[in-house]
Image (cartoon, helix red, strand yellow):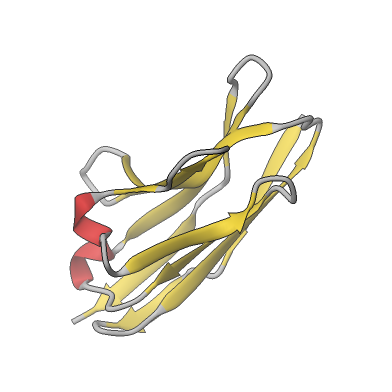
Amino acid sequence: QVQLVESGGGLVQAGGSLRLSCGASGSISSIAAMGWYRQAPGKERELVAIMPRGGSTSYADSVKGRFTLSGDLTKKTVYLQMNSLKPEDTAVYYCKTILSFGLRDYWGQGTQVTVSS
């Protein structure tokens, strides 16, 4: 069993900042990648940022220059610093981890981010 615990969502005004945290626990020998996705009402879930082991972090074009993904995959923890937030960033943000063994993926329960105009 693998569990992901997210925190840090909330309500913020446009131009503000929030920091999301995600920690993984359970039967994890090694993580291949870890990051964040989001899903706005009526839209499909989309990649926000993901950090692969030994590779470069990838960002959605819509968040480049505003969001920063950091963390330590050996410590099974990632953080998403979100600056200059816009109303269109409003969504439920989900943490995802992909295990090295078998490339199985796991999702967190989601945390709501609401940006008011």
